Length: 88
Image 1 (cartoon, helix red, strand yellow):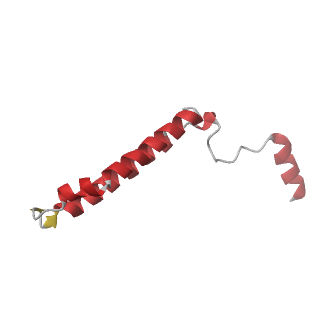
Image 2 (image 1 turned 30 degrees about the vertical axis):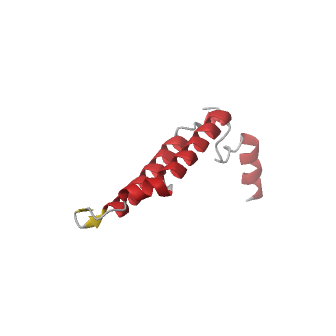
Image 3 (image 1 turned 180 degrees about the vertical axis):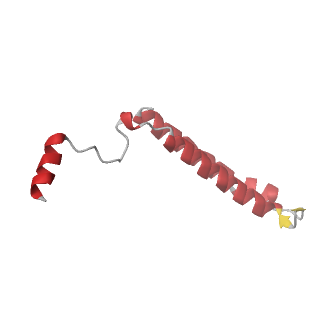
């Protein structure tokens, strides 16, 4: 995935979060109905929050290290290994 595409997906995920937590949509779930003794609003909030977290994790996980977006440290080269061995 290119950096531009990742950026676009993260922006779209942010906008989805804004939409899911907008007061007009929250008002739809703020009613007297209960599921398993829990108010619908609580279930909606935790469900929407969970969906956002899972989508963010999937989006970030799909970024391959070859894209140059990974923050992992590069493997040391043989010359670096030799230098570290001599210093010990």
